[in-house]
Length: 193
Picture (cartoon, rainbow, N blue to C red):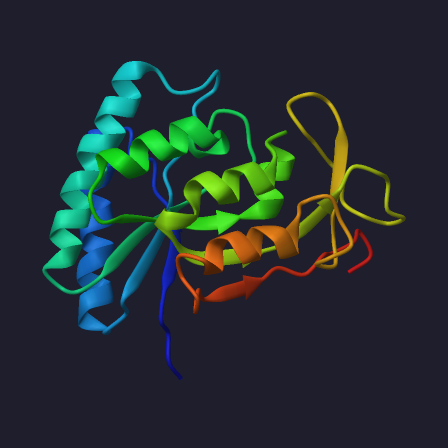
């Protein structure tokens, strides 16, 4: 068996979580795993300026440490309130501020955030290191697990190409910068399965 990446929830706006991230990097190095994808934590009401500054500082430290082992660090945009990477400008600010940091782009998560996924792909494509390909619709799907966007729209995951997340167009924007971008296809699920 071969593992090429590890995905973890790690609230990096707090200093005390950096040590845990560094321990994970040591584990990755020992096991020759070359990518660490991070969801960097949710904050009710959104990040403060101080928390964003801490996040950037902590990510710089983590990226620099990981470079010693040839490990790439990437953050994922998550479609939940209180996550800095739910908005294009916040995501771009952090990516530009942390040299060597990549983005796990999830077009369906931008749709869940009420963000135009195609606009996000056009602006963020140069930073994408992996593409979580998923699609969402703004209409009810029988048996689907529904989530609400910040504006209150109900949305659910559907097969790629059948939704409102511009899957194909986003992919075409990203491959302009990274022709062989690794894809992770996320399948829809229902309440029955």
